[in-house]
Image (cartoon, rainbow, N blue to C red; front, side, top):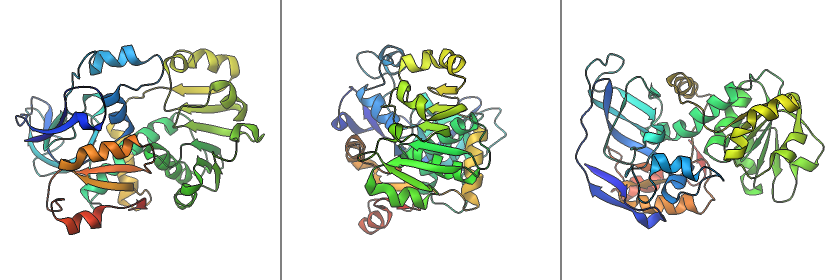
Length: 344
């Protein structure tokens, strides 16, 4: 099978297409023929080892110290179950699924194996594989974090980094929960986040949201570049801070800061669950939740996809088309699928 492999840490050119053995599902596993995946911020951090302060040592244990331990990136996928291992009853060959692979990675290949009892859900029938792949990373992450805030109708929510994969998903999920959403993004993405449900947009380039004197029931930080001492000022008493991107100090002090301030702080990685992914899939199936796709690349062009993500200007998701009837060798199909900052 083809796979996008990186043998060294570094820039986009470290990623090359190689032939690798087709995996075989073990007991309790699915073998999925991958149709689409995304290049996410997590792939960028793994490839470059540019991680939040203090996390280089713990992440190196998983990723490798000198060279990559996991050669195929890709934290998510959408595809078709080709085979199942012993004991699997939840899925069968032919099922269309989407999945979050997490730190195991492996989505940037023709085939991937994954636990059948992991974060896997049936693909919404009304979406293409590319669109389904664009649901996973942001959708499951936003769902997991927002669940920690116990949102209620009428709650005020501030989302920092509202046009990224996680932020765009969070704007939609918070709006669906009945919250009043204020989005922090660039001015060029204001129309996008409004179309997702944000009632107000703050342009971070021209306005300091921490100095405006406004407070919110929930602050969700998808960027991680504002220190807690400034964020605390904009959280209402008894409110919540959801730090999706957090350094080691923020993770270790979340509990003590919660006790000291009376504000509930969730920082760092949360478990990925099938229930969270199924919730996102259900909302997409009914048309209430929409994937946001910036660009679609073919697998042979995956280094270009990484380069685009590295530039730091992506909106929503960058999708990699792996295989299938919509194969990206057909230039007319590529033009059709290359959605420049478009909601599907």
